[in-house]
Image: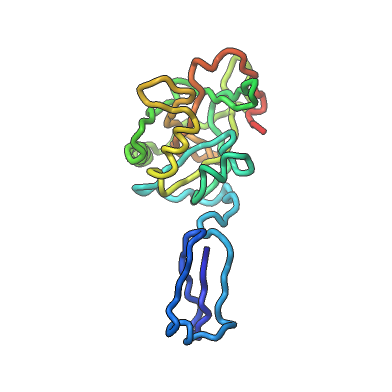
Length: 226
């Protein structure tokens, strides 16, 4: 939420966490007329639209984590608001792979083994450090060339690239959602792979289905889960 005070020299803008209580001393409020107080009901970090694809992606800094999502974590689906609060940036993106759907309608992603740059663990800051290391040394990476996946090749899978600045808060919860347990049996596994944004490739984290999920999967030829 933003709280603004209209002063002669312009607006003063204060960042306030959602559901927080703001208290001002009487001697402070007496300096302003009633008309000069304005509440703007919005979550500052949550107020954004998907960024235009031609806008440059901000350079990664320590503490920021990029996550490619293709299923229920996409905006408009039931897990986005619960697990992706505070997302800083949302981009249209694609990854080379195949997209499947289970009987329960939950999507399952596969990517080529040769595309995997690193494997995730339970330490969110270690994942950020891995991202920084690869971002600094990878100038470019092959972009997916096929438009859809068939049974015998790899195509594009479409989703959203999310950027978070609080991975220690958001990533453990997403790990639990995906059933990711490093070193143990997992429903999904966390990998670091190249993600394509209109010809520009940025490595990012994503979750793929474990090999135990192979039976009874329906291939989504379009590469888009709805």
